[in-house]
Image 1 (cartoon, one colour):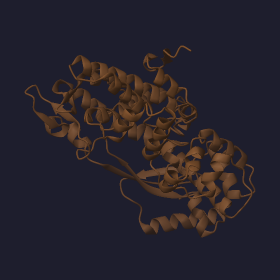
Image 2 (cartoon, one colour; image 1 turned 90 degrees about the horizontal axis):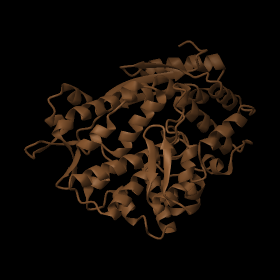
Image 3 (cartoon, rainbow, N blue to C red; image 1 turned 90 degrees about the vertical axis):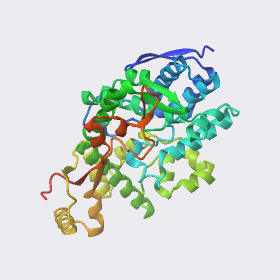
Image 4 (cartoon, rainbow, N blue to C red; image 1 turned 180 degrees about the vertical axis):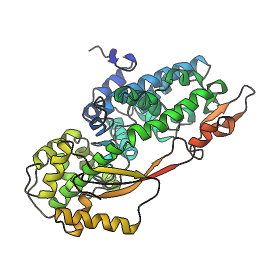
Amino acid sequence: MNKKKIINDPVYGFITIRSELIFDIIDHPYFQRLRRIKQLGLTDLIYPGAHHTRFHHALGAKHLMGATLENLRNKGVEISDAEFEGAMIAILLHDIGHGPFSHALEFSLLEGVPHEQISRMIISKLNKEFNGQLDLALEIFNGSYPKKFLSELVSSQLDIDRLDYLKRDSFFTGVSEGTIGADRIIKMLDVHEGRLVVEEKGIYSIENFLSARRLMYWQVYLHKTSVSAEKMLIAIIKRARKLVKKEKPLFYTPALGIFLKEQVGIDRFATEPAILDAFLQLDDYDVWAAIKVWVNHEDPILSKLCRMLLDRELFRITISNEPPSKEEIKADEAKIAEAYQLEAKDVKYYFSHGKLTNSAYMASDKEILILSKSGEVRGVTEAADLPNIKAMSKIVRKYYRCWPKDISL
């Protein structure tokens, strides 16, 4: 079978698969599952074009990793063929641990299990199937490989993951403010004393990259309507779990049922192979299928929430710079309870509040390094004479409240 393939990607054009091992990984059911998990969850309710998947993103990241490694080789950085392939596999599989609706359900369907930890387990599982051929990729993914720059390309504040998702999410949402010069940034990358650095002349491209990321958070990832839809989905899952706990009859697929019935934390993933196997059967389709059936459930709360989400009758949401007071929250909850004739314990399904944070750049976390012409290496906030970069290193916090539109608060 010919495993040297080309794939036509709407963002980059033709992506070439030159490695038979990479072809076999892409062809594996664990990776094919990513076709059934949208990259941006419920964001297509706001931006209708946002139907791209984790599968798209992983392939795009692999493509950019290949271009980056070729560029570094051309600059004299020593990268063996095994390291080249290992880094490509590490970025290809970096998001394989995402579950349905990704971040929205990461801490409700699961018990606070970050997708990175599940990715690590799945890569280890694949490594056994491929007889240790993913050893090097796993080291790079874990950050334990001696050449640190390879791990920084997989996970840092200027990694290949971010370069692809900003460019791809901007393309599919149509939010042009998120457009970045990924090619230019890649050309400006180099390695100095084992660390990934950006040549000084690329600093304006980094400013644009950080600015685009900040704008994409407010306009896409933390768009208030997207936050509202996610809170409704979380409420639906919480209500379904409550009904399952009360042993009420409820439809669910076998994979979804396990995570509705049981509290699944990272310890169970590590000790019970059946849990990871069930997770690898789970995708967006399980959740949507259940929601479409639950619309007709006898429980009025579950039924109403599912109907509202399917018909895009999303909660109203307000954003403010100051958190609401406890008194305001209590008053809001009382109005909702009265309007829907709810017991106090059930108001939480129709009302949520919390904090949104946007940090385009964290100077304390794997700082982006700038290499000057004189050979000096400094962090980007120190190296830049641009007030924008310094401003973007500050965390911006906003506070939200959301509730059904037919209730006046």
